[in-house]
Amino acid sequence: MERRPGVPRLLREINDRAALDLLLATGPMTRGQIGDLTGLSKVTASQTLARLEERGLVEVVGAQAGGRGPNAALYSVIPSSAYVAGLEVGPELISTAIADIHGHTIAEVTVDPGGHDDPVSVVHGAIVKACRSAKVSIAKLRGVVIGTPGVVDPRSGDVRFSFDLPGWHEGIHEALAGDLRREVTIENDVNLAAIAERADGAAKGIDDFVLLWSSRGLGLAIMLGGKLHRGRSGSAGEIGYLPVPGVPLPEDIRTEPGRLPSLAGGLQSLVSAEAVAELAQGYGFAAGSAGECVKVAVAAGAAGEPLLDEIAHRLALGVAAVCVILDPGLVVLAGEVGHAGGAALTSRVEEAVARICPVRPQVVTTTVTDNNPVLRGAVLAALDQAREELLAP
Image 1 (cartoon, rainbow, N blue to C red):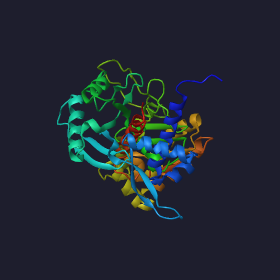
Image 2 (image 1 turned 90 degrees about the vertical axis):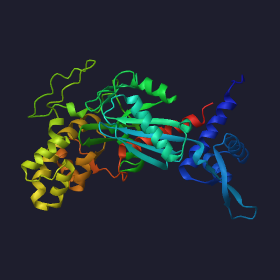
Image 3 (image 1 turned 45 degrees about the horizontal axis):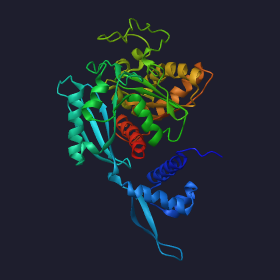
Image 4 (image 1 turned 30 degrees about the horizontal axis):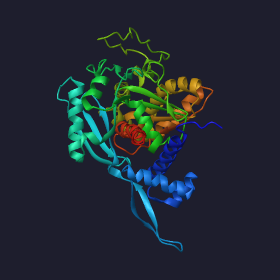
């Protein structure tokens, strides 16, 4: 049989990846435990750990007592072997988190762009400040993921358009990578919230679900087969444009260079935070933000039910349209409106969808406990990149 060159090397890489992933997922383990859970022989497990030690990725952190022989050494991934940066960029604030390879956040800072419209300098400054706070050199960053509102072009990596970030034009992605001297990923903010939801929230371990985000803007993240579905142009989930009964159609939605589309009409005009706050005022719940209005309505009991019924009816128009096409099984309501509504809102949405749609999904409230799910999602996405890079040839 003809030997294929490179096969032993490939097998070594597969074994190294399996051991590293296991240690990152479960924490310190002995050589024997790694062998048992990966199917590697004792000799192969020892060789794998030796390679990972040589590359400065794992170390012995203790010993496990038990058995007749000597205590077995416990191996763990070295936290400082790599760091990542996750960012959430908005029109008024930029939040940045630095995490080690285990995903533990070691520094988080928020900066005000101060009216600067150059994304490269603003992002650079935010990352430098966060790295200083974490006492980590920028050179140690193995992954950088930036969450922004708007549509991200999957081909160029640029934000095609964003109402809130007009300065993020074509070429910014390449400029950021050049400035930071490393690969940079720009991702839609709602998609990142869905990543956090699947890792730590109501969709933990679930491969097929959608996350409907209702805050200042309206967005939908689609997770199919455990992977984000972005669409050919990156516009999958732009549910604000969805035509709904009784609402004018969005008009003049062209996205020519230097020109932002209109979002008058469509589902956005019914369930954005601005629309919900206006609706709440009509029901006598003028409590400031949309989230606060919904919280007051929930606390008001019977007096708040008419408002919750109307919000649920509006949300159901979008949820039903998504479910008859994707049938995701699970719908997570997030953003300030979804989070504030809790079970009182999700139960109403589920019932309203069942009345107008042959598909009845489970509708739940986000359970991501992190105060900033977009930022957490950015860190998690950056960790995936960093872990791949650690074992790159």
